[in-house]
Image 1 (tube, rainbow, N blue to C red):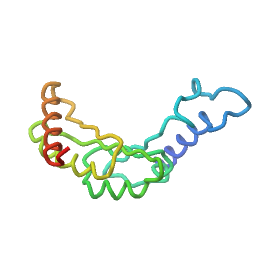
Image 2 (image 1 turned 180 degrees about the vertical axis):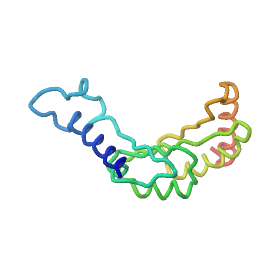
Image 3 (image 1 turned 180 degrees about the horizontal axis):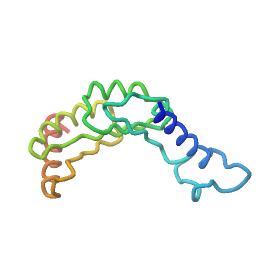
Image 4 (image 1 turned 90 degrees about the vertical axis):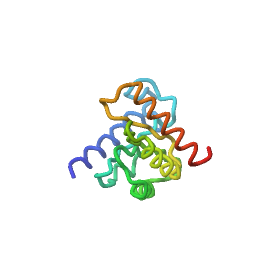
Length: 146
């Protein structure tokens, strides 16, 4: 419950710092006015083991992090999606089995995310991570005919 209140306070603070209409004719409290109007989009992070909160619904979109089942991801996205909302999905990639991540990416594409972020384990070397990402891309391309 405390986490929910913290997220809601953060969203309120951002709204005050970058109001849609500048107040009293001065610049917003955080740097110059943002290029994106009324402010940069705020994506709320949601992990597979967390429940959707009011803060997730109030954000401009959702960033799904961690191992998500595509059906569970679709349920969470339907719960918070609204006109103009952004979805970013992170997909874990096991360099030893990139085909598994390819299947998840193909399923997640059906949700229409703005981005799909591939994430290899932190201990993965650059060459191994890039090879795994290339294998995922090939798998998705072959599966979807993209």
